[in-house]
Image 1 (tube, rainbow, N blue to C red):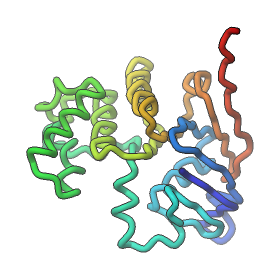
Image 2: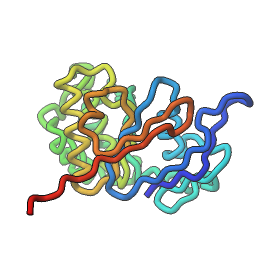
Image 3: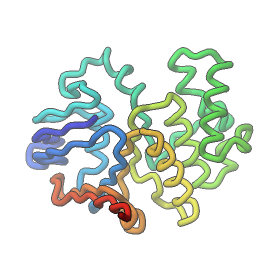
Image 4: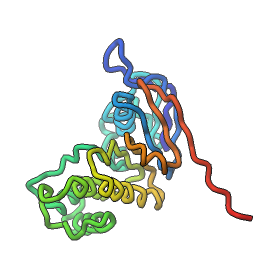
Length: 227
């Protein structure tokens, strides 16, 4: 699903945000990115979303070479992606429902179909009862869950979440993670960056970055069934 081969990302001549990154993420995997601030986690996610392009090396997402992707191909790539960031960028003058409908409207769906899909997405993350509310009336955790609903309303193949639980209390963070895991359970590939050690304790696969390099990666072996 996602293949990095010797990928570098340079913002300045002397500093590499990513350096010689090679890794593979399969379809339907749930993978966590860990590492200190400035390790390159956000840059890696931006490369997958083609917000940034590699300076060297090759990156393929769903068979598309991001380094060679033309501007005309970006909308087709983005339709496969659900993007979730620390700053939700919700429109505070519109209702929760209208915010979640927006990606569908942009994709050309009718208002009726967009509303139907948006309500289904809100129901999936337990926020349907807040459909008519304005985002400013919600807690930080609720706003983040609305951002998740907006990210998945187009039914993406891949979810990229950059520190989705940052600055949330434990209860809110767990609800956000439960929502993301529910999408993974139906086959969506999820890549989540985090500083939260408690999350990593329950992770099946973690990729550690430091100073732009992959320094460690581990995968929890599945438990064998009893004979």
